[in-house]
Image (spheres, rainbow, N blue to C red):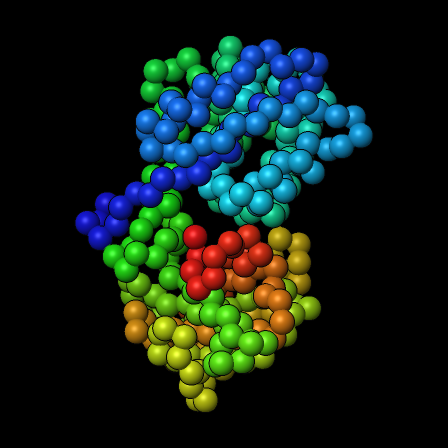
Length: 287
């Protein structure tokens, strides 16, 4: 890891979903993890026939701003199909709301990996009986939650993202700024839900400055992301550590915003990074 970066304490939600009865209290894991620089909160949920598990899990993860979800896996996961179906459904919904890279880990108690249904094994599974379980858990977060040399937090990201409220002194305007911290990007693209319109976009000096009125090789198009219609747009004004790309919005920000490079002046975007502004709890930075 570069000297300019240091690990910050990730916030983890430990959740024990159960069907019939709470077999044991796993809150003792919280102080154990604190000793390993992981801030944890513990909750147990009894599954209810009239409420899906995801409807309780997703709001909890969003409201506190957790960096990961650790769910306890016991014999229920292979003896009760309802349990597996509900937990799988909750994981799918967390992916939808938090993104596919959001850490979700199964902590196995009293069972072996081969007992975990394949649908749950697609996510990391760690055995509580393994003396190295805390180290394995820490490895999931390593290089994901970092402090840059300027003190801004980022998560496994290629770019530095900022949110500027009251952009240009206008309380109705909010700007998303993206700059590259490693290499210059000649052809860059934003992508947003097709139903959303921008109030302006382009390139300009980093730090919330004005956007240039000149756009070279302006490109636009449509596509799909997570089953949603999107619009992508960008230009060839180079993005670097001193020059940023901006997308300005009037009113609420889109549900998600994507950014990434294109291979040609007028071509579509390639691999894109995605943020979800509604999940952020602090202005002016991604955390």
